[in-house]
Length: 420
Ligand code: NIG
Ligand code: FE
Image (cartoon, rainbow, N blue to C red; front, side, top):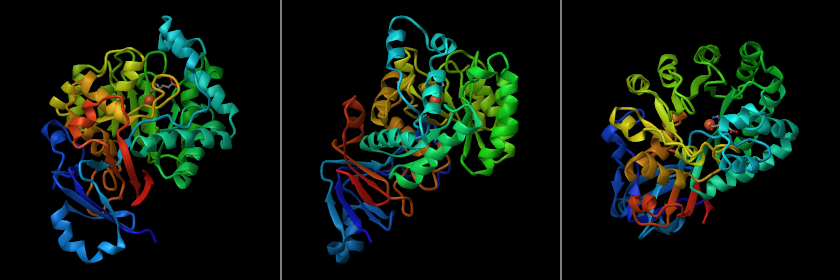
């Protein structure tokens, strides 16, 4: 049995809890952080047992103080563990040469169409054994944890055939069982048309629908189904068919939408009832309005925009128009090889004009909503999983203001200290 943990005197406890509010937050609700000054939390049996001011918790727990690990959080911000709702973390190899090529003038799609990009990582992922992939992915998860991230969504999409898509999903499943970071699996066989199907795109779509999706669903290897809907990748019509096929098998749709060119991806997300639409750099105003109406979470990836030297998505406009916004690293070997959610929070403020409060909501509660985990994580509430971060700053504004630095001091995962 692990000892209970009693965190006391947090200068700011950002609970992210809004009583009676259900579902992802937008507009003003994204700024409601449920702040408690001189805050305190009691963690026991992996869950949050009590939250309040230190004085309030003293009344309940003073007789049990000798049982607990008492943590003095004076001068520290305390938040829920960060949630990364969009990553491609289970990949083989790396692509640093492409970084140089882009700096020399090549575009992301030039490289991909010439057999690099996603195709290069597909080759490296196919060549890697399951054990090698587990080892490489575990290292990345360690880095996520060091940056205060306690739950990570992970996509397949570098196998692009039955055997290797299943291999990637098994790696994610294995790590969900054996790594402290929680993983949530997404099938993304429609990440690219593999090179052996060049000129036979329709056949690949049929192959995914007829032969891959049913096996993924049958083996319960994924919760979500994601498609890269983009010019020269999958058309909105193909994306819709793949997502609808997934829905019939119980897989919830997500879409990489309007990343490089405007392509009606945001509109499609609303039409198929996707839980989230990702990227959205080039989303149309109509698409944004439709997402707001349908309650689709915009999962925005400002590190990817920066890395590709593109203008970031219109995060400010989306929030003001009622779209709930989440943010994510998009951790992948091409367009965003980072595991730093704190950096992504900084960038959300700098390049998308989110406020520091909105940015924290986007990286915790709304991120949990984007992976349908808001009943368990994303806020500090009684009964939720005890995933907590203690930061080396005294308030949430400073977390966003002192940018590009890792301010994590301590992390608890399910009530057990795993960092610090
Ligand atoms: O989300 N846009 C498509 N997929 C990834 C990049 C994958 C890669 O370049 O390997 C993304 O940015
Ligand atoms: Fe992505």
